[in-house]
Image 1 (tube, helix red, strand yellow):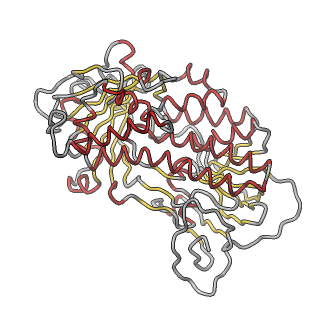
Image 2: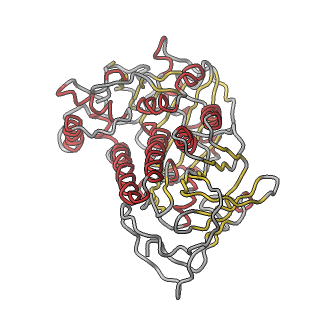
Image 3: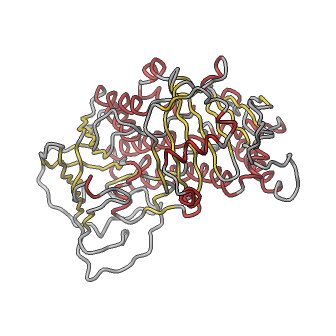
Length: 493
């Protein structure tokens, strides 16, 4: 049995979501002799979902793929499938545009934007992102990096985006390419059959209906609908973080193209971001351990103001700043699903997992997994006999890339001082810096040339614990801090 098998499972409160905002969600399941615990399946092992009740359905016109969620993952998959001639429908619970965090993209998503046919729209609408600057909170060390200098780089830029505009642009583009999109529509029930999925939906005006699809793609975001239902969602206990953030106007910026660089400031127990979104608007936030935030006993707004005031490298650019949005907060957002595929479904985007906002991997992983999911489903629709092999390959591929970023994130938090000490002292030796730059830009790092360089980088981080290969850092703010990076390099270490 692949899934834990309680008696008929009814979800009346999604994980982390207020009950008043959601209706009941049910999934038809076979009734086992008794409720019992089951071991989690191998995440890449694909078998028949024996615990799902087989639903008899008449031969009617059905969709090829139904997608839950209209964010970057859902809209990317919908456009690609529609372009391939597939009949696709997207269910989005909200009405776009709406606020969302995750505003800094990576260069390796640009090739997907080209494939979607949306690149020119993005160029006209959003700021380019050429790289970033990363600084130690103590103000004694910092570097700039540029994507163009990554190892065998093919892309020199990404985008800084207002997610409300970005997500709407992608979803509208899906409509333009033939996908059917239903906003303010919630999935309320799923019945899985041998060859299709029956989906009950309800719109905001209370209208209920049922559609059928050959396959279901869950792009429902951090609520990870199927992951929660099948009990395969697992949080990273060592990455229980809390963030507070808001938008500001009148932030001082660097001149020229450096004006669009993301700034990251790493402290001993927290880190800050500063992301230019438009010519005048900037996203600013701070991330720390959930326990650290709770110990302050401060409201998100008061906490954000206090933390910024304590950090000179942030405060120096905010002398004339005016907050123009509410202060938002998010917590305990690091998780992964132990299974990404089933007999008739796949998980993609944040519904598959979310590691951490550091290194701007969220939207990149969403778009990457959605592209792979769309190609996988298109191939499965062409030849059902290859479905299991295709789904297994998809799971392995997405998990491998998520592991790359998990390794970075673990080093950023768990070996923060050693990691930063090496990270902020790049050298051109053996192009290690360029390899790290490329991987952080979204390269899958498959080539041996990148793999051995990345191995050396992590070896140096490990050895830094015992030997001062790079200058030691306190990561504690000082009254007089370095205002700009003291080293401008063509690559992150």
